[in-house]
Image (cartoon, rainbow, N blue to C red; front, side, top):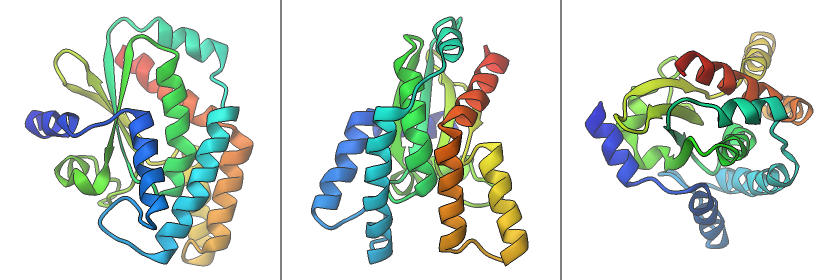
Length: 200
């Protein structure tokens, strides 16, 4: 496992580099990952707008910022993501803002399809769902915990929708994004803070 993590870290990038890669590919009519399609291009365009808005509007609650600032150790937050993923667009900007407020957190981004071995270590019910935040001890690279691909409330909404409709269609996706909009990143913050408090 350690070798896989070390290799992924060698290929990792900053949040700004991650955003720039998505934007550059979009300008060429392409998306991140192994698959290219009109649908994925459309989702990526929507996600660019979402991420731009979230970067301006997301606030890290003062008490959360204080907790992140008072972590006892230094950590790497390694995030697996893709530009076309709607959940990533809602969650990754919040993770970025949280990492920014703490000198104890170094945020690194990797793309899922470029890091298959890493992704396969962090499957969700057998699926390669993103985003996935992996918390590493900065000195030893030991895996201390992970979060994702969705906060509990969003997970429940999708489970309920699937139970009712048999699948998640465009209406289901719209409901999910409305949930994120109303939540304002608070559930994501709380669940990650809870994880860090357990680890720390």
